Length: 290
Image (cartoon, rainbow, N blue to C red; front, side):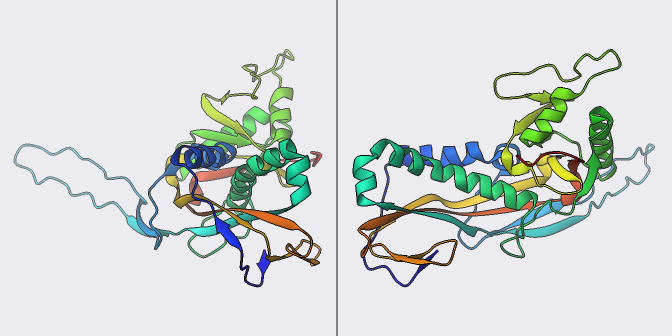
């Protein structure tokens, strides 16, 4: 993050078509955004009424009093938290390696989308009004992929949800590809160039963000994505600065003006809420991290 106050910082007002393209890249990179429901998010947050139980109908005879159903409702606040990435460049780099520079800048929305997903799956929430799936029920798919997926589907149903989408890591995809029946035929054989688009009749997404090494490792998630919402305030913001001081990951500090450099910052203000009981993590042992 930047330290000090830059005196030559420029906010770029991008054309609407370009802004929509950048936002589309963030959403394309984020598999959570692709499966969960999106809702408008004002700057001061929004209240979400969450239905904890369904209304129940009942039969009644002629002239009998009709039953009253009073479903349980809870309120959650969907609030935006700032997620950003800053990349420094030399002026010479932009001039002499313009194609690479453009490629890196184009990847900034991808970095935001992946970090958002990784936080939803595993990370420490940026605030109290941001839910994560870090502690949801885990189902092993190490020895029997099919049985593990069915167990997850059943657990979600027992908590009032309907599993309607999977997000796998590359390692989880490998387990799916290796799953065979008793005659050694692949169970999941509808493979396309983008992976396995459907598992147990449900939409499937693949992302590196869904993997966490451990004993066991987490290789994916499934759940009722109608019970998850996300929102973003004002889209993606892009800023440039030529004389800020930046603190790098090794805690060294560089002054952009002194080094004839500039920095590009991309940021979003985004939030996520979910009924976490409606989700399961999918795990396996002995899975390589890379």
